[in-house]
Image (tube, rainbow, N blue to C red; front, side, top):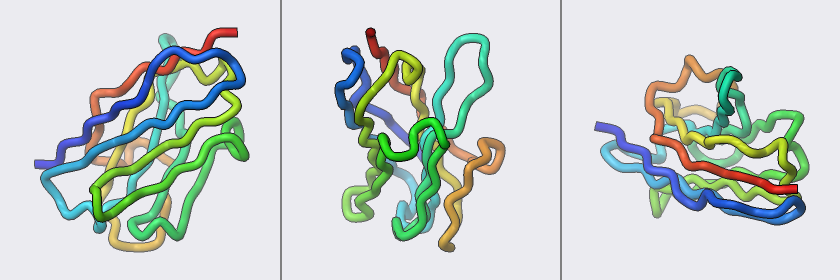
Length: 126
């Protein structure tokens, strides 16, 4: 059974940086495309970043492009989200997601992901 566990969230001042981690188990991690989404109360879950199984293909939401970096370590079964130059608008619960995809695609739509973590809270103060 695929399990995803996020960590690294917390409280940060605007302009600061955080790195989120998502540890994966129960599957062949290198056969899965991975992504980060975020959610705030009253809003739909929003795409943040996605990465293909090898890491060679990435996609980013326009709102985070140039500030966030998604990466993965297939030896550690972990995907990361480096978040720089944080703003209060980045405040959300961040979710890690996985889908079986042994191809060079980085999908940005939530319904195409089969597995989700429990989320980690990121709060950015002004």
